[in-house]
Image (cartoon, rainbow, N blue to C red):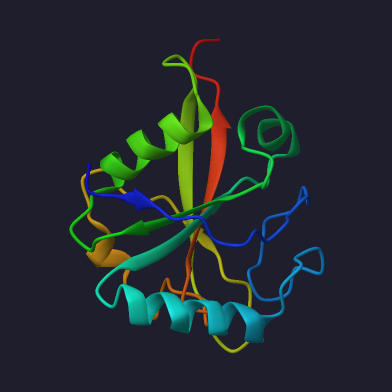
Length: 151
């Protein structure tokens, strides 16, 4: 598997609203702390992409995500979204019939709403490793949502 998970101190998120990495008052870390954390990681793994997966769906979050309420991953730029979904499904213990959709948070421009996109499963993280998707703290935030496909 091309991705490796990395234990990093948790950022607690319990909101039903879409998570904004910069302004959510529920987070326990301020922007300066997240930037410092990113700098430490980027010195250790300079060619990697740092991903935080979370869910803005409270019921899905309570049932499937680990107690830290989010998952952090370190991925190489050539890792595909499909490989990431496989790793995520393993970490969350999702059954094969549970479908999930990933939404990538676009970086804010002039303090406006960031917006969400659905990445294609065949694309690699290299396509999202630029200022359009990376938040100012250096992390790539991915919102994981359940999808009912069998009725």
